[in-house]
Length: 172
Image (cartoon, rainbow, N blue to C red; front, side):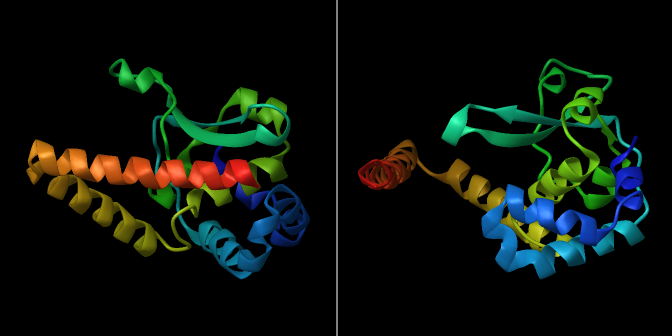
């Protein structure tokens, strides 16, 4: 079963309660998620050699849902591992099969919710997602042009910020 087939077999009103249960903070963005759901239903899928894999990772309060892609016919070692797919075009998402394990462990509605949440992680339009991709590529190119000293200074700054965030979380 492809993600497109799964979407076509379901309606937005049946998804809303589960979406809010799975991602309570998403309640404020329901209009955006609904628009994405409706947009996806009008799009044509693009065939791709990747299956959507959904797994529950961690335990208790540390548990989270991971959505990734796995090549059905890997061409190299990297393709034998799960891949991030949040930046993949929506037409390709629609053409992806849902892995058998995901279908066995999650309901159709849960799969839709987790996929839409992952697809919109950086934006509610493909244009917004493309802008983020462009930012990342620009940042990567700028970093490649840095001297080792400049790069080390940026890394140290990022590590300092992350350490501060961890300390704040630990004090809560």
